[in-house]
Length: 403
Length: 80
Image 1 (cartoon, rainbow over the protein chains, first blue to last red):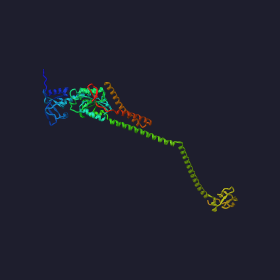
Image 2 (cartoon, rainbow over the protein chains, first blue to last red):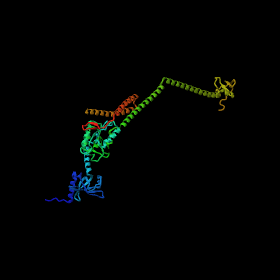
Image 3 (cartoon, chains in turn yellow, blue):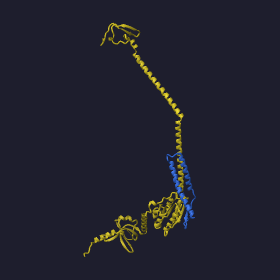
Image 4 (cartoon, one colour):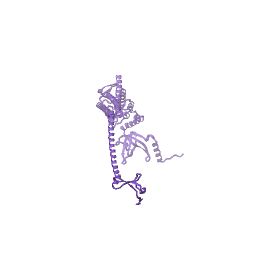
């Protein structure tokens, strides 16, 4: 039977593929101590990760350097996250680092990330579960240490903004053993007692100090709490799981007090402002009504019988004025025409002709004689002169002498 | 003690809602008064209503100063 014989390259390729197909090796976090750490000029970092049991060589390529946020050195205890792959040329496997964290902090960080992911998937951070923070809370519950800076800050802010709001403190253990349970008890106790809003938090500290606020039990207690919860853990830059699950995240305990306790003076000012606004609106309405009234008065006056009568009188006077004017005008016109006509008439008067020596000849029938052919010999014609008249007999006729 | 707390709690709840609602009602009155077609009679009525609500708000705001309380081991609030 023939033995199967493979080349070195084939074997290395086979093993590389095995590694590549392995789910765990593709994304793995390995804890160990850094040794043989070399920063290459290319930007790559070569190092060995070791613990009491053994060593593994590791590399972080320049392109992944964003995953390293501290100056890594010999002896650092770290958690390296990346993939384990085979380098075919040497037949060796290596850890290809994408992220390197210091083990102490990094450990908590990984837990934080894992819980955050888990709770997010469960919908505990979803906006639809967030309760609105009441604007005018009268009872404010506080879960924090009775001796810390947080309660002092909250008291100061609250008494300055509104001394009439009832603060109720649940004195909780906020760090160390039993802190999470104490905070959970506090949230439940105040929820049962009945407050309008609750502040859950503490002052600043290291990530370990704030850790209780990253515990699942606290997250669940906040989520299940009927009362709206404002989280106020550490400083602005500290974000805990409690902040994600709370109904509102305040950057600091002081800020939480500002959000929970309404400003009394401001509320009073608003009331005064509203009162003034309403009074102004009413005055405007009255002024508008006065204006309407005065308009109505004017209109009524205008429409009154007296006004109508006066109007008619004025109209009558106006008509009279116009008619007189028109008549005068027409009379003048006619007079002028008459003058013109009498001038013309004068020009046409026969008396004027008679004076110039012409005479008016008429036949027996009384008509004017204008054609010699129309007259018989021996006919008697009347000749009218300027002064007096003649009666003459026709002796001879000369028809159309000039034609 | 427990009964008293219950009553106190209910009262505080009522007042909180009342204050918030009354503020909202005054805003509503103002909005109505701002309508151009509102009549003078209506304006007077709204104004009276608003002033009454303002009085309520002011009364709710004027209260005694509170001392901080602390929850004792038995779960009841006490003067600190």
